[in-house]
Image (cartoon, rainbow over all chains, first blue to last red; front, top):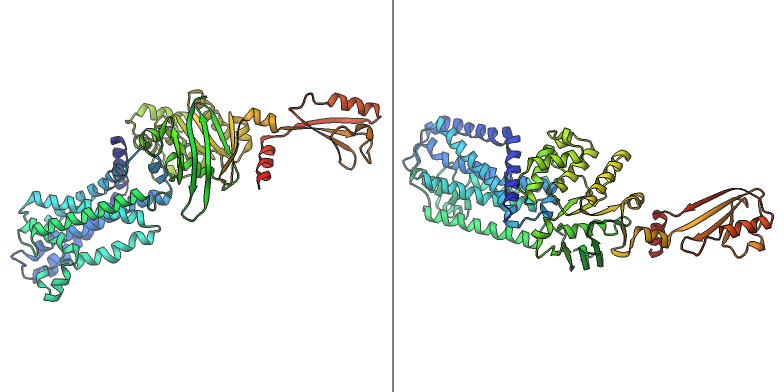
Length: 253
Length: 308
């Protein structure tokens, strides 16, 4: 195991993050605050509580997930796309590192950033809405698992992308709609029955539902099912990454 | 001679069907400077990239210091440093940070003192905290050399190290490369500047259309293929070569004002003395003599064009 290499990649990625602190931390916090001002205070005051949870508190887990997914994907995809774009990937490819070490460095750094950001958003939310976390350990577990899974997903996108447009298109066209339709701002049970069934095909529903359960002990879908779905998605991502390095897809000719 | 890099039967066919390398056999000796010459697209960079692990071989075996570069990639790659042709750097990163990153990536523990040594060796210590994007291209080239040296490799690949580098920096770089060789590093460089190979290399390999067409000690190569020419400036023009001089390979040039005598440096004696005596006897006066030796470049051009 080349621990020095993992450390080098991880440190490099985190320092890139600190260099762009404004973009990577402050802007998600500001946008989250805006969500709270609009949905929590302005609209939320006119909404009834859902499953016994006030609307302002209800949307917190969904908002954290929204940011967690976006940040994990964009951090990880950008982290591996940039060396490909600038050509500096030659160094990683010629270094005595295994695929697992490269992934640990890049994905580990991206997941670390998203988890820190998720926690920061929780702290920010506390300024607007009082809430409690029923299962803090489970909450943290969901946070970390989701961050790792979607950082892996972002890593795959970053390797697949051969232009900036491709880098943006999956988050924009697929992930953001799935997140908004995945119950960030409402409970699936509020939908007409047909849409409730369709919603079950949206993987983000499981992420948000399980995460919300860890806060308030209530959920659209059982926490066990949510956890299982995250693990399935994690396994799929790991399998794809394994295939990428085995075949050298878009990395080595 | 002990071999530091041993390439056997290396073939590379890209997915497009392009055959970049054909059955390459090559041995690089420990501690030598080996220059790989070849026209654009000959396969120089592909060969280097395969040895360094950036491109996959289609067939063949490569050992670096006895370690298979595919099966035993950790041991092999940790001994190798690569300075690629393209100036690819992390523009926003600072010089010292990027060199430290390279050291870690190649499995060495952090060592601030060693990084300082490397940066001083390439005259970048004063720029240690500068962002790479603010540096000149010559300095960026040196950053890349520092990155390649950060983990103390035994083998250094320099792919076109002096492309687009000014004369002074090129001299500095040559001095640095000699210093590295003196410290025991094996160096493989590709270059377009034949003078660079002529100046630096112990041995020269010529690659053309994916095949190694020649590997030779530089001195032997120049002796073997080198030709000398003697140009004799005549006092009065000649219309034809006098029959008395027929046994010499002579050509008449410069509107009859110049006799060109081409001879092999390997031949037993040059025959110049005899020729001059004959000229004297024939009453042909001359005012100047000019002798020249063919350079590696001439040799190279004639080799590659013979193949084309």
